[in-house]
Each structure stands twice: as structure tokens, then as C-alpha cells.
Image (cartoon, rainbow, N blue to C red; front, side, top):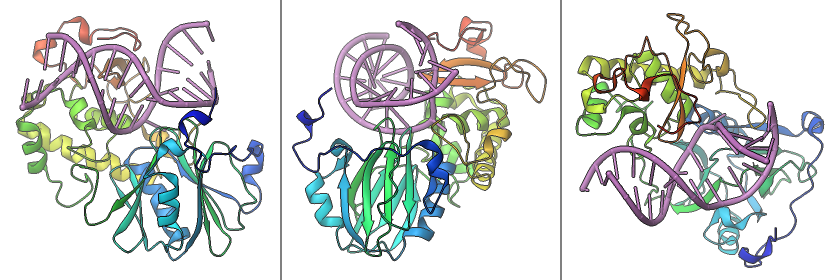
Length: 319
DNA sequence: TGGTATGTTCCAAA
DNA sequence: TTTTGGAACATACC
């Protein structure tokens, strides 16, 4: 494949050669984290905050210009000489506060992660897509195997994108969730994944919250009783809070560092016994996402009862 | 080799 | 209008 066609020439050179894997655990270099749902991004943000606040950017390089906006030259000019005033989270975005009404939003998508080296550009990592260099010689790298991650400079006064409520904020109440779901005709799982409604839930924690609330993922949102929505609200907050405490879920080659994987009750447990009732956990596909639930603890909605949509079938099949 | 992946967006169709 | 499915983005692992 040719890299050159779409890069308009800006800062487009070969990315640094990756060090062999074991070297990542030596020396000063430290892996910040990885991962993509709210607890994982929150974990990233907390660690980045300690490392970055007060540091002044002296250079920015992108090795995959398609993932940054505006264009690399504009972005580089805007970032250079900026001091990072704060690091926060909005939904699944890492937000670097730059002062002067500017913010840098970084979305890790599926495989984005940060690496930091206080000693400067000596360390180079696998899949490095962007590097920030600071006045004291330290370097921050955004690494992203699948290149889905996005880095966007936005006006802090006009916050983008349009994201829904923060599920761990005080304003996310059971009543609020009821209102959010009441007028919806869709199924509950895709609605919980909709970032314009609730910002931060992803595939793992949605399945986990639905299990804890005893709600089948295909249940039409408007059919869920008020009492059950209250349970769902509590389940969402509990599972997210627990995952934040555990520093998120570590899964496969792309993600390491968290401890929540040992606490998951249905996600990734297809055909294994439900911890509550011993029924095998079932895997189906909902809105193109792998979906795990216990068919006994999470009763199918009445209109689907007995239908093939909730019967055993391999997760690779379309519904 | 093919199926799958923690995310999102765009389009078409229902 | 709302909802849903499919493809696309791009790569790595099993």
C-alpha cells in the first residue's frame, strides 16, 4: 500500500521503528494505558493529568495525518507553545485543556493508547501515530494499531461533539434515565450504546449493566417498567464505578493494565455457567455488536419469547 | 483463511 | 421521523 496519496505531504514520514515488546517494561518509559470505554478513558485521564498538567508543548508530529483535524500544519502551529492546563474526560474522549479557549479532544476508539517518556524521544513504541514533545524534553505518544483514533482541536466555548449525559455525574438520576428511554421505540442495548444519550457506555459495560439489572438486551426501551429502569440506573453506575476502581478491563493483545476482567459476569463468557443461576451465558448479535446475557436472569421480551432471535445461535450469525 | 475485536459514521432501507 | 442493518475505517490475533 502506498501511504503518500492522501497525506498531502504534511509531516508524512515513516513512523519510528517499534522497540521489541519486552523493552517497553524497561527504563523510564511507562505505558499509560489503553482501552476505550468510560472507565478505561478515565484511567488514562487520571494518569495523564499527573504527567501533563503544566507542561508546555514545543512540537507536535503526526504520522497518520488522516486522524487529526484540522490539518497537521494548523494543528501543530496551534499546539506549539501551548501549556496544558488540565486533563479531563468527556464520554470516551480525553480532553487536554490548552487555555485560550482551546481543547484537544482525543478519542482512542478501539485500540488507541498513550505512552509517556520523561526522558524524551528515546523511547519509541509500536503503532506510534502522533508525538507531543515538551519543553523539558519529555514526550507523549499516541499509539493506535487500527488507526481509528481521532485527535481534534476544538473551541472550549463551543464544546463538540454532541454527547449525552455523563452517567457518573449527579445529574444522571433514575428519573433522568426514565425520561431518556420513555419516548424511544428502539431496543435497550443499542440505546445504551448511543453516545448522544449517555456518554461513555460501551459494549462491555452495557452487557454487564443489563445483566445486573435483569434486562434482556432486546427489550424495547419503552417496555421496561419504571422499577426496572431504576435498577438499570443503579447497575450502570455501580458497574462503571467498580470498573474505574479496577482501572478498567484488560482483554487481549491490545489492552493491558486494568483489573475489571475478573469481575465481568457475562461479557466474554458465552456458554459458561451464569454466576447467579448456572444457566449457560448466551451470545447473540445486536446491532452488529457481540452481546452476552443470561437467558434465565434476563427474560426475553414477550414479543420475542420462543422466537429464534433469542434461541441458541452462534454469535457470528446476523439476527 | 476467515472470523472477531472494548468505536463511530455514513448511507440506504424499513 | 425513527430505527435498523450493512459497509467502511485499518490492523492484529487466534
